[in-house]
Length: 228
Image (cartoon, rainbow, N blue to C red; front, side, top):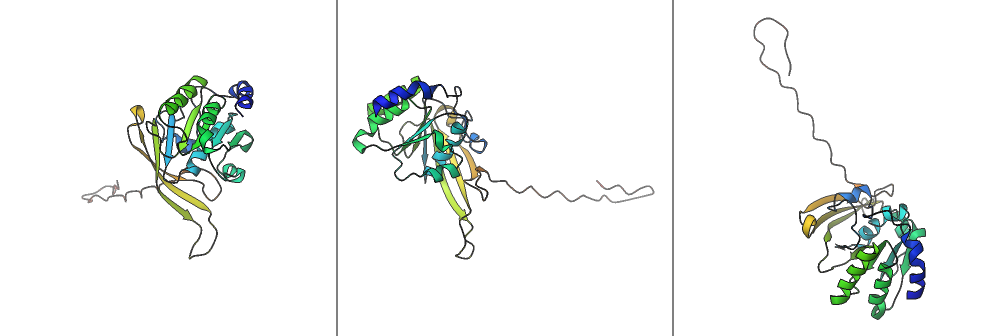
């Protein structure tokens, strides 16, 4: 597997769009640089698979190849429904005892790496970050990652469409809290449709505040009545 990935690496790296890996507009406000920084780890917790996949949507749409490691049972339909170009998504299965070395190989050959859980730890985790920084790979971990630069935590999830116990799940609403280190230390919050009833990932729109009623001033004397 490692030899095959090494052979593919030059072709895959040509598709990398620049210093930041793009994300969907609805997700930009959760990240301090409004994109994913190569060589930095973003951890997603609290029911994280859908949000991790959504973070890959804009990258694959821009032409970048993405690898997903450790996501047992991940289906192409689920990824496509969140906007991922499945033609540029490579789902990799590896025995748990080999996931560390496979993760290193993937970080050296892909523009974006999605990891389920933390298959590496200690010095190997530091090496993974070093390899990712050198090769220009951004890393998103669905799970805890000590030292993650950005941490996204799903604090609530609500499905809509069931009505009174029957119906069809049509939309999912998430509340996400972002934090981390350095520029990411300032807490950010967002409510997202992931997806909405039309399958789009977007921010929840807040209802506009009602307009203030005009106030009438007492009218004294002659002349027109002025309303302000």
